[in-house]
Amino acid sequence: MDDNLATGQCLCGAVSFRVSGAFESFYLCHCSRCRKDSGSAHSANLFSTVARITWVSGEDRIKTFRLPKSQHIKSFCADCGSALPVFQEAHGVLVVPAGSLETRINIRPGAHICYSSRADWDKDLSSITRIGGLPG
Image (cartoon, rainbow, N blue to C red; front, side, top):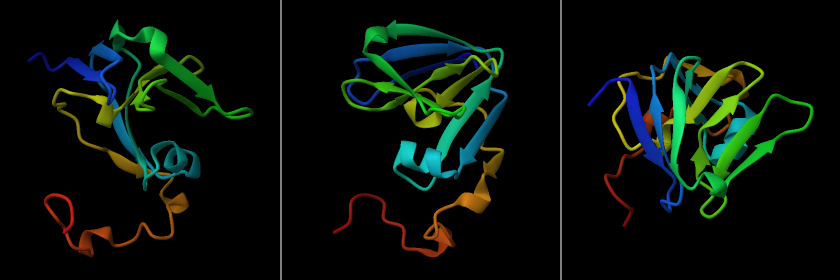
């Protein structure tokens, strides 16, 4: 597969997309806004100023939320709520949630950002039990 071509979709499959071009960075963001967006310890997003997105299906199902008085923006599927790529016009950057991709990517996270804002329970997580499937 072409290293500069990635495909993805939402959880329900209503929205699918193709990204052509290289990802320049990959960050795990621990800010409170990204934690709320993801419902987890951090968001995992790929960034590119050169990649272009093509919506293969479901573009009409995409909703976008912009947090007033901030630069925070999130796109998601109106049906299942899955995070989807969004173009941040103010910065000229395509932001792609890593979990929305179906294809392998050849870039690893480069940094934990806003790490000082991480959740108080997000410490020493490598020491907890690991279970290969569902518990119990």
